[in-house]
Amino acid sequence: MFLQRITETAWTLSQEMYDKGKFSDCLLVREHLLTAMQHVFGHEHTDVAAGLDNIGVVYRDLGKLPEALAKHDEALRIRRSKLGDDHTDVAASLDNIGLVYGNLGNLPEALAKHNEALRIRRSKLGDDHIDVAKSLDNIGLVYRDLGNLAEALAKHDEALRIFRSNLGDDHID
Image (cartoon, rainbow, N blue to C red; front, side, top):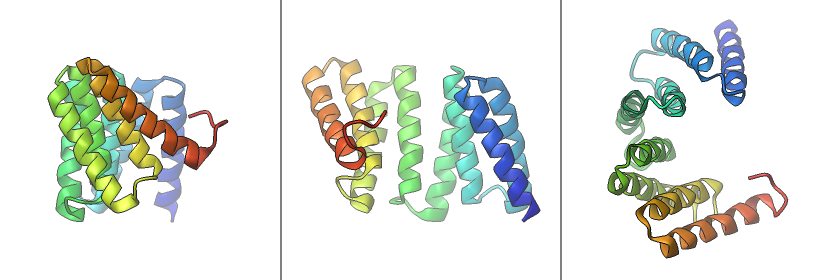
């Protein structure tokens, strides 16, 4: 119970740092959290995978793309081994990896990862889930970067329809 409260407090603090753009401070807290989780749960736990994915996001925002990719790849490996290939947490890691590949300019690999995430999310969550919309939006960004604007627009329109049906027209997202 005590460890859970400390972890939740540290996570909240790291998220506040992230939201304020204090990525280096956020990274430090998240790395300490990861070390604690590894000590408590072992290195192959799904909570450790979530921590790795969260650290990867911060590395991506810091522009440290090889480090981000390594963290997301490790998270994906753990999640696949513990949850199977078709779990929504696997899809989250795939989407994160796709974003890093997009930032690295490897657009075919980015598209493949986002499409795999979309396939999993559609099969597990249905066609109208917000996470499906997030994958569609990411795919639209890759198509835009590839210069296929018609396909990009189609993916963004589909994502927007899902966002609106779930969140309404006045939601900030």
